[in-house]
Image 1 (cartoon, rainbow, N blue to C red):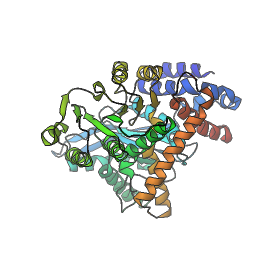
Image 2: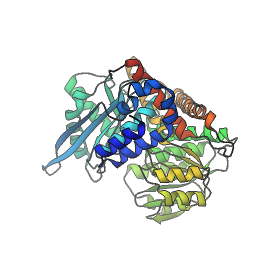
Image 3: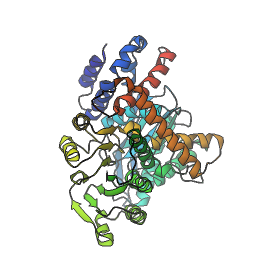
Image 4: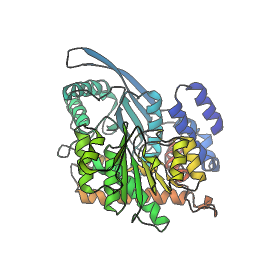
Length: 448
Protein backbone atom coordinates (compact mmCIF):
# COMPACT_ATOMS: atom_id res chain seq x y z
CA UNK A 1 0.00 0.00 0.00
CA UNK A 2 1.41 3.39 -0.99
CA UNK A 3 1.56 6.34 1.39
CA UNK A 4 -1.29 8.00 -0.50
CA UNK A 5 -3.37 4.84 -0.11
CA UNK A 6 -2.66 4.90 3.64
CA UNK A 7 -3.76 8.55 3.85
CA UNK A 8 -6.93 7.82 1.88
CA UNK A 9 -7.68 4.91 4.20
CA UNK A 10 -7.18 7.15 7.24
CA UNK A 11 -9.46 9.82 5.76
CA UNK A 12 -12.16 7.21 5.16
CA UNK A 13 -11.78 5.75 8.64
CA UNK A 14 -11.43 9.03 10.56
CA UNK A 15 -13.34 11.73 8.65
CA UNK A 16 -14.11 13.43 11.98
CA UNK A 17 -10.40 13.85 12.88
CA UNK A 18 -9.15 16.73 10.68
CA UNK A 19 -6.22 17.76 12.91
CA UNK A 20 -4.83 14.22 12.88
CA UNK A 21 -5.20 13.87 9.09
CA UNK A 22 -3.51 17.26 8.64
CA UNK A 23 -0.51 16.14 10.71
CA UNK A 24 -0.17 12.87 8.76
CA UNK A 25 -0.30 14.68 5.41
CA UNK A 26 2.32 17.19 6.53
CA UNK A 27 4.75 14.40 7.42
CA UNK A 28 3.94 12.31 4.34
CA UNK A 29 4.58 15.26 2.03
CA UNK A 30 8.27 15.33 2.90
CA UNK A 31 9.31 11.73 3.64
CA UNK A 32 8.22 10.02 0.42
CA UNK A 33 11.73 9.89 -1.09
CA UNK A 34 13.27 8.54 2.12
CA UNK A 35 10.42 6.03 2.42
CA UNK A 36 10.79 4.72 -1.12
CA UNK A 37 14.59 4.55 -0.84
CA UNK A 38 14.35 1.79 1.78
CA UNK A 39 12.29 -1.21 0.64
CA UNK A 40 12.13 -2.51 4.23
CA UNK A 41 9.86 0.42 5.18
CA UNK A 42 7.22 -0.79 2.73
CA UNK A 43 7.84 -4.47 3.51
CA UNK A 44 7.27 -3.94 7.23
CA UNK A 45 4.40 -1.45 6.63
CA UNK A 46 6.16 1.18 8.70
CA UNK A 47 3.99 4.12 7.63
CA UNK A 48 0.78 2.19 8.32
CA UNK A 49 2.07 1.22 11.76
CA UNK A 50 3.20 4.73 12.67
CA UNK A 51 -0.11 6.29 11.66
CA UNK A 52 -2.14 3.98 13.91
CA UNK A 53 -1.56 4.43 17.64
CA UNK A 54 -0.57 1.40 19.68
CA UNK A 55 -3.65 2.12 21.77
CA UNK A 56 -6.13 4.85 22.61
CA UNK A 57 -7.27 4.82 26.23
CA UNK A 58 -10.57 6.65 26.76
CA UNK A 59 -12.24 7.05 30.13
CA UNK A 60 -14.81 8.98 32.12
CA UNK A 61 -13.67 11.36 34.88
CA UNK A 62 -16.14 12.01 37.71
CA UNK A 63 -15.33 14.80 40.14
CA UNK A 64 -17.11 17.05 42.62
CA UNK A 65 -17.23 20.85 42.32
CA UNK A 66 -17.26 23.31 45.23
CA UNK A 67 -21.06 23.23 45.43
CA UNK A 68 -21.08 19.48 45.85
CA UNK A 69 -22.32 18.81 42.31
CA UNK A 70 -20.95 15.81 40.41
CA UNK A 71 -19.27 16.80 37.15
CA UNK A 72 -18.35 14.44 34.32
CA UNK A 73 -15.56 14.90 31.77
CA UNK A 74 -13.82 12.73 29.19
CA UNK A 75 -10.17 11.75 29.49
CA UNK A 76 -7.81 10.18 26.97
CA UNK A 77 -4.28 8.88 26.61
CA UNK A 78 -3.07 8.15 23.08
CA UNK A 79 0.00 5.91 23.23
CA UNK A 80 1.27 6.21 19.67
CA UNK A 81 4.66 4.53 19.50
CA UNK A 82 7.25 3.26 21.95
CA UNK A 83 9.67 2.14 19.25
CA UNK A 84 12.60 4.12 20.67
CA UNK A 85 11.65 4.53 24.32
CA UNK A 86 8.80 4.77 26.84
CA UNK A 87 5.76 6.71 25.66
CA UNK A 88 6.34 10.40 26.38
CA UNK A 89 4.11 13.42 25.88
CA UNK A 90 2.03 15.98 27.70
CA UNK A 91 -1.45 16.11 29.17
CA UNK A 92 -3.70 18.94 27.97
CA UNK A 93 -6.75 20.19 29.89
CA UNK A 94 -8.85 22.38 27.60
CA UNK A 95 -12.45 22.31 26.32
CA UNK A 96 -11.20 21.84 22.72
CA UNK A 97 -9.47 18.56 23.57
CA UNK A 98 -10.80 15.56 21.68
CA UNK A 99 -9.41 12.38 20.19
CA UNK A 100 -8.42 14.05 16.88
CA UNK A 101 -6.40 16.77 18.62
CA UNK A 102 -4.64 14.23 20.83
CA UNK A 103 -3.88 11.91 17.91
CA UNK A 104 -2.38 14.81 15.96
CA UNK A 105 -0.27 15.81 18.97
CA UNK A 106 0.74 12.21 19.71
CA UNK A 107 1.71 11.56 16.10
CA UNK A 108 3.86 14.71 16.03
CA UNK A 109 5.39 13.69 19.36
CA UNK A 110 6.87 10.52 17.84
CA UNK A 111 9.12 12.55 15.55
CA UNK A 112 9.72 15.44 17.94
CA UNK A 113 10.98 13.05 20.61
CA UNK A 114 13.08 11.14 18.09
CA UNK A 115 14.74 14.39 17.02
CA UNK A 116 16.04 15.06 20.53
CA UNK A 117 18.24 11.97 20.38
CA UNK A 118 16.85 10.83 23.73
CA UNK A 119 15.13 7.44 24.21
CA UNK A 120 11.49 8.55 24.22
CA UNK A 121 8.47 7.33 22.28
CA UNK A 122 5.43 9.40 21.34
CA UNK A 123 2.17 9.89 23.24
CA UNK A 124 -0.32 12.57 24.25
CA UNK A 125 -3.30 12.80 26.56
CA UNK A 126 -5.68 15.07 28.35
CA UNK A 127 -9.27 15.99 28.99
CA UNK A 128 -12.00 18.38 27.85
CA UNK A 129 -11.98 19.77 31.41
CA UNK A 130 -11.66 23.57 31.42
CA UNK A 131 -9.47 24.89 34.26
CA UNK A 132 -10.57 28.49 33.62
CA UNK A 133 -12.77 29.79 36.41
CA UNK A 134 -12.18 26.74 38.58
CA UNK A 135 -11.00 27.05 42.17
CA UNK A 136 -7.76 25.46 43.35
CA UNK A 137 -9.78 22.85 45.22
CA UNK A 138 -11.77 21.96 42.10
CA UNK A 139 -8.60 21.61 40.04
CA UNK A 140 -7.05 19.43 42.73
CA UNK A 141 -10.11 17.17 42.87
CA UNK A 142 -10.19 16.88 39.09
CA UNK A 143 -6.47 16.01 38.89
CA UNK A 144 -6.90 13.33 41.55
CA UNK A 145 -9.88 11.86 39.68
CA UNK A 146 -8.11 12.01 36.30
CA UNK A 147 -4.99 10.15 37.40
CA UNK A 148 -7.06 7.65 39.38
CA UNK A 149 -8.45 6.50 36.02
CA UNK A 150 -5.15 6.69 34.12
CA UNK A 151 -2.56 5.45 36.64
CA UNK A 152 -2.69 1.77 35.71
CA UNK A 153 -1.61 2.52 32.11
CA UNK A 154 1.48 4.64 32.91
CA UNK A 155 4.82 4.12 34.67
CA UNK A 156 8.42 5.35 34.61
CA UNK A 157 9.41 2.67 32.05
CA UNK A 158 6.02 2.48 30.31
CA UNK A 159 4.55 5.94 29.75
CA UNK A 160 5.71 9.21 31.29
CA UNK A 161 3.18 12.08 30.87
CA UNK A 162 4.06 15.74 31.35
CA UNK A 163 2.23 19.06 31.31
CA UNK A 164 0.78 20.97 28.37
CA UNK A 165 -1.91 23.63 27.93
CA UNK A 166 -3.89 23.87 31.17
CA UNK A 167 -1.48 21.57 32.99
CA UNK A 168 1.41 23.20 34.83
CA UNK A 169 3.50 22.37 37.88
CA UNK A 170 0.51 22.58 40.22
CA UNK A 171 -1.55 20.07 38.24
CA UNK A 172 1.39 17.70 37.69
CA UNK A 173 2.12 17.76 41.42
CA UNK A 174 -1.48 16.85 42.28
CA UNK A 175 -1.43 13.98 39.78
CA UNK A 176 1.94 12.74 40.99
CA UNK A 177 0.67 12.76 44.59
CA UNK A 178 -2.31 10.58 43.62
CA UNK A 179 -0.14 8.23 41.56
CA UNK A 180 2.25 7.84 44.49
CA UNK A 181 -0.67 7.23 46.83
CA UNK A 182 -2.17 4.52 44.60
CA UNK A 183 1.04 2.67 43.70
CA UNK A 184 3.22 3.29 46.80
CA UNK A 185 6.04 4.09 44.36
CA UNK A 186 8.20 7.20 44.22
CA UNK A 187 9.27 7.03 40.60
CA UNK A 188 9.70 9.42 37.70
CA UNK A 189 6.29 8.72 36.21
CA UNK A 190 5.37 12.37 35.56
CA UNK A 191 7.71 15.15 34.48
CA UNK A 192 7.23 18.81 35.27
CA UNK A 193 7.11 18.19 39.00
CA UNK A 194 8.27 20.81 41.46
CA UNK A 195 12.00 21.24 41.95
CA UNK A 196 12.92 19.51 45.19
CA UNK A 197 10.67 16.47 44.72
CA UNK A 198 11.78 15.13 41.36
CA UNK A 199 11.36 18.13 39.09
CA UNK A 200 14.05 19.63 36.92
CA UNK A 201 15.36 23.16 36.78
CA UNK A 202 14.80 24.98 33.45
CA UNK A 203 11.73 22.84 32.62
CA UNK A 204 9.44 25.88 32.76
CA UNK A 205 11.69 27.86 30.46
CA UNK A 206 12.73 25.00 28.17
CA UNK A 207 10.25 25.19 25.28
CA UNK A 208 10.54 28.96 24.84
CA UNK A 209 14.31 29.01 25.34
CA UNK A 210 14.71 26.01 23.03
CA UNK A 211 12.75 27.66 20.21
CA UNK A 212 15.01 30.69 20.41
CA UNK A 213 18.11 28.49 20.46
CA UNK A 214 16.85 26.78 17.28
CA UNK A 215 16.28 30.22 15.75
CA UNK A 216 19.79 31.25 16.80
CA UNK A 217 21.14 28.42 14.64
CA UNK A 218 18.85 29.36 11.73
CA UNK A 219 20.21 32.91 11.84
CA UNK A 220 23.79 31.68 12.09
CA UNK A 221 23.27 29.50 9.00
CA UNK A 222 22.40 32.71 7.13
CA UNK A 223 25.34 34.62 8.70
CA UNK A 224 22.96 36.72 10.78
CA UNK A 225 22.47 37.41 14.49
CA UNK A 226 19.62 38.61 16.73
CA UNK A 227 21.01 42.16 16.87
CA UNK A 228 18.39 44.68 15.69
CA UNK A 229 15.93 41.91 14.79
CA UNK A 230 12.28 42.74 15.56
CA UNK A 231 10.40 39.74 16.96
CA UNK A 232 6.62 39.26 16.95
CA UNK A 233 5.34 36.62 19.40
CA UNK A 234 1.80 35.30 19.81
CA UNK A 235 0.63 33.80 23.07
CA UNK A 236 1.41 34.83 26.63
CA UNK A 237 1.97 31.52 28.38
CA UNK A 238 5.21 29.86 29.42
CA UNK A 239 6.41 29.30 25.86
CA UNK A 240 5.71 32.83 24.63
CA UNK A 241 7.07 34.69 27.64
CA UNK A 242 10.22 32.61 27.93
CA UNK A 243 10.83 32.88 24.19
CA UNK A 244 10.54 36.65 24.61
CA UNK A 245 12.91 36.54 27.58
CA UNK A 246 15.59 34.54 25.78
CA UNK A 247 15.31 36.57 22.56
CA UNK A 248 15.82 39.69 24.66
CA UNK A 249 18.92 38.14 26.27
CA UNK A 250 20.33 37.53 22.79
CA UNK A 251 19.87 41.20 21.81
CA UNK A 252 16.62 41.03 19.83
CA UNK A 253 13.78 43.56 20.14
CA UNK A 254 10.53 41.82 21.13
CA UNK A 255 7.46 43.86 20.16
CA UNK A 256 4.38 41.73 20.92
CA UNK A 257 2.68 39.05 22.95
CA UNK A 258 -1.01 38.16 22.75
CA UNK A 259 -3.88 36.17 24.19
CA UNK A 260 -7.40 35.21 23.10
CA UNK A 261 -8.58 38.79 23.76
CA UNK A 262 -6.06 40.61 21.59
CA UNK A 263 -2.45 41.68 21.07
CA UNK A 264 -0.16 43.75 23.27
CA UNK A 265 2.21 45.87 21.18
CA UNK A 266 5.09 47.78 22.76
CA UNK A 267 6.91 49.76 20.01
CA UNK A 268 9.77 50.44 22.45
CA UNK A 269 10.28 46.71 22.95
CA UNK A 270 9.95 44.64 26.10
CA UNK A 271 12.59 44.73 28.83
CA UNK A 272 13.24 42.07 31.47
CA UNK A 273 11.30 44.21 33.96
CA UNK A 274 8.31 44.26 31.61
CA UNK A 275 8.48 40.51 30.97
CA UNK A 276 8.62 39.82 34.71
CA UNK A 277 5.51 42.01 35.10
CA UNK A 278 3.76 40.01 32.36
CA UNK A 279 4.65 36.73 34.09
CA UNK A 280 3.13 37.98 37.34
CA UNK A 281 0.06 39.27 35.51
CA UNK A 282 -0.57 35.93 33.79
CA UNK A 283 0.08 33.97 36.99
CA UNK A 284 -2.57 36.10 38.72
CA UNK A 285 -4.91 35.54 35.73
CA UNK A 286 -5.21 39.27 35.16
CA UNK A 287 -5.69 40.95 31.73
CA UNK A 288 -2.72 41.61 29.47
CA UNK A 289 -4.20 44.94 28.46
CA UNK A 290 -3.44 46.37 31.94
CA UNK A 291 0.17 46.58 30.68
CA UNK A 292 -0.66 49.73 28.70
CA UNK A 293 -1.52 51.66 31.86
CA UNK A 294 1.69 50.47 33.50
CA UNK A 295 4.22 50.83 30.66
CA UNK A 296 2.53 52.36 27.62
CA UNK A 297 2.27 50.74 24.19
CA UNK A 298 -1.05 49.77 22.66
CA UNK A 299 -3.69 47.09 23.15
CA UNK A 300 -5.13 45.75 19.87
CA UNK A 301 -8.42 44.19 20.93
CA UNK A 302 -9.38 41.07 18.98
CA UNK A 303 -6.26 41.28 16.80
CA UNK A 304 -3.23 39.06 16.21
CA UNK A 305 0.36 40.36 16.08
CA UNK A 306 1.01 39.81 12.38
CA UNK A 307 -0.25 43.24 11.27
CA UNK A 308 2.90 44.77 12.81
CA UNK A 309 6.16 45.11 10.89
CA UNK A 310 8.93 42.78 12.03
CA UNK A 311 11.69 40.39 11.02
CA UNK A 312 10.81 37.24 12.96
CA UNK A 313 7.43 35.69 13.79
CA UNK A 314 7.08 33.14 16.60
CA UNK A 315 3.53 31.75 16.86
CA UNK A 316 3.44 30.34 20.40
CA UNK A 317 -0.30 30.09 21.16
CA UNK A 318 -2.10 27.05 19.72
CA UNK A 319 -2.66 24.89 16.63
CA UNK A 320 -3.87 26.45 13.37
CA UNK A 321 -3.70 30.00 14.75
CA UNK A 322 -2.14 31.28 11.50
CA UNK A 323 -4.15 30.86 8.28
CA UNK A 324 -3.10 31.86 4.78
CA UNK A 325 -4.45 35.41 5.11
CA UNK A 326 -2.32 35.92 8.22
CA UNK A 327 0.69 34.32 6.50
CA UNK A 328 0.25 36.86 3.70
CA UNK A 329 0.12 39.58 6.36
CA UNK A 330 3.40 38.33 7.84
CA UNK A 331 5.16 38.45 4.47
CA UNK A 332 3.73 41.88 3.65
CA UNK A 333 5.09 43.19 6.96
CA UNK A 334 8.63 42.02 6.32
CA UNK A 335 8.83 38.71 8.21
CA UNK A 336 11.83 36.65 7.05
CA UNK A 337 11.79 33.90 9.70
CA UNK A 338 8.82 31.95 11.09
CA UNK A 339 9.55 29.68 14.06
CA UNK A 340 6.74 27.59 15.53
CA UNK A 341 6.74 27.72 19.31
CA UNK A 342 3.33 26.01 19.48
CA UNK A 343 2.35 22.67 17.95
CA UNK A 344 1.27 23.10 14.31
CA UNK A 345 0.24 26.77 14.65
CA UNK A 346 0.29 27.27 10.87
CA UNK A 347 -2.28 25.69 8.57
CA UNK A 348 -0.98 23.72 5.60
CA UNK A 349 -1.94 26.56 3.26
CA UNK A 350 -0.07 29.06 5.44
CA UNK A 351 3.04 26.88 5.48
CA UNK A 352 2.95 26.46 1.71
CA UNK A 353 2.64 30.21 1.20
CA UNK A 354 5.51 31.33 3.41
CA UNK A 355 7.78 28.68 1.93
CA UNK A 356 6.87 29.80 -1.59
CA UNK A 357 7.83 33.32 -0.51
CA UNK A 358 11.29 32.09 0.59
CA UNK A 359 10.63 32.75 4.27
CA UNK A 360 12.83 30.65 6.56
CA UNK A 361 10.45 28.26 8.34
CA UNK A 362 11.01 26.03 11.40
CA UNK A 363 8.26 23.50 12.19
CA UNK A 364 7.16 22.96 15.78
CA UNK A 365 8.35 19.37 15.95
CA UNK A 366 11.90 20.72 15.65
CA UNK A 367 11.73 24.23 17.09
CA UNK A 368 9.65 23.49 20.18
CA UNK A 369 11.33 20.20 21.09
CA UNK A 370 13.20 21.87 23.96
CA UNK A 371 10.40 21.20 26.41
CA UNK A 372 10.30 17.46 25.89
CA UNK A 373 14.10 17.36 25.73
CA UNK A 374 14.33 18.72 29.27
CA UNK A 375 11.52 16.34 30.30
CA UNK A 376 13.78 13.56 29.05
CA UNK A 377 16.63 14.97 31.12
CA UNK A 378 14.27 15.04 34.14
CA UNK A 379 13.56 11.34 33.57
CA UNK A 380 17.31 10.69 33.66
CA UNK A 381 17.72 12.71 36.86
CA UNK A 382 14.86 10.78 38.48
CA UNK A 383 16.47 7.47 37.48
CA UNK A 384 19.82 8.26 39.09
CA UNK A 385 18.35 10.31 41.99
CA UNK A 386 20.53 13.31 41.23
CA UNK A 387 19.83 16.91 40.28
CA UNK A 388 21.73 19.12 37.84
CA UNK A 389 22.18 22.87 37.96
CA UNK A 390 20.24 25.36 35.83
CA UNK A 391 23.45 26.31 34.03
CA UNK A 392 24.34 22.69 33.18
CA UNK A 393 20.86 22.01 31.84
CA UNK A 394 20.82 25.24 29.83
CA UNK A 395 24.09 24.25 28.14
CA UNK A 396 22.69 20.80 27.36
CA UNK A 397 19.41 22.25 26.05
CA UNK A 398 21.29 24.64 23.77
CA UNK A 399 23.38 21.76 22.41
CA UNK A 400 20.32 19.54 21.83
CA UNK A 401 18.62 22.33 19.86
CA UNK A 402 21.81 22.83 17.81
CA UNK A 403 21.91 19.10 17.09
CA UNK A 404 18.27 19.11 15.98
CA UNK A 405 18.94 22.09 13.71
CA UNK A 406 22.07 20.58 12.20
CA UNK A 407 20.51 17.13 11.72
CA UNK A 408 17.48 18.62 9.96
CA UNK A 409 19.67 20.84 7.78
CA UNK A 410 21.94 17.94 6.76
CA UNK A 411 18.99 15.68 5.91
CA UNK A 412 17.91 17.96 3.08
CA UNK A 413 21.27 19.32 1.95
CA UNK A 414 21.03 17.40 -1.32
CA UNK A 415 17.61 18.96 -1.99
CA UNK A 416 18.83 22.54 -1.58
CA UNK A 417 17.78 24.61 -4.58
CA UNK A 418 20.26 27.21 -5.80
CA UNK A 419 17.38 29.66 -6.28
CA UNK A 420 16.66 29.94 -2.55
CA UNK A 421 18.84 30.32 0.56
CA UNK A 422 16.14 28.63 2.66
CA UNK A 423 16.97 25.34 4.36
CA UNK A 424 14.02 22.95 4.24
CA UNK A 425 13.75 22.35 7.99
CA UNK A 426 10.25 20.89 7.65
CA UNK A 427 11.38 18.09 5.37
CA UNK A 428 14.61 17.62 7.30
CA UNK A 429 12.90 17.30 10.68
CA UNK A 430 10.34 14.88 9.29
CA UNK A 431 12.96 12.73 7.58
CA UNK A 432 15.28 12.51 10.61
CA UNK A 433 12.48 11.81 13.09
CA UNK A 434 10.76 9.33 10.80
CA UNK A 435 13.92 7.37 9.99
CA UNK A 436 14.85 6.99 13.66
CA UNK A 437 11.44 5.55 14.53
CA UNK A 438 11.13 3.56 11.29
CA UNK A 439 14.55 1.92 11.60
CA UNK A 440 13.62 0.73 15.09
CA UNK A 441 10.39 -0.81 13.79
CA UNK A 442 12.24 -2.60 11.00
CA UNK A 443 14.77 -3.95 13.51
CA UNK A 444 11.93 -5.30 15.68
CA UNK A 445 10.28 -7.13 12.77
CA UNK A 446 6.55 -7.65 13.11
CA UNK A 447 6.25 -6.88 16.81
CA UNK A 448 5.80 -3.35 18.23
